[in-house]
Length: 123
Image (tube, rainbow, N blue to C red; front, side, top):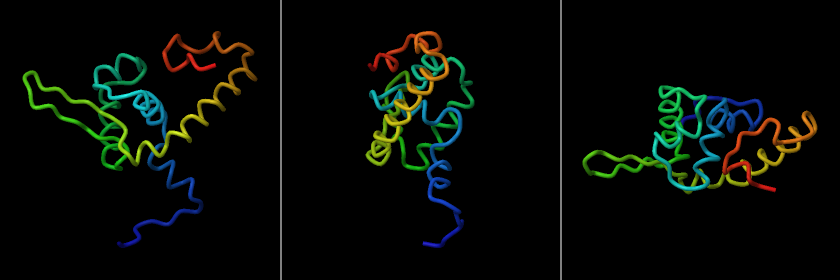
């Protein structure tokens, strides 16, 4: 295996795979089970279809998510965390916990800034 790149610190390698505005959000949704592309788009209204498709492709290429194609009419595709992707569960939960604490520090009340979502029912 040829080394194509050098990192200054290991977190750079992690952020190369899961960094950016949307990847962790996608992964948090997939921690709760398989999702179709349209489901993800519906629960992430701020993401464009093009960006969602691009992010899912990158996560699939990095082995973080599995793309499951059902050979039926009409075609059906679902995404789920791969076993490797599931190894991010503790990290994603820690980010959510830190985010909760940050929101409380900055705004006092999570309900003021968090959307009403199944992901925000953790207390």
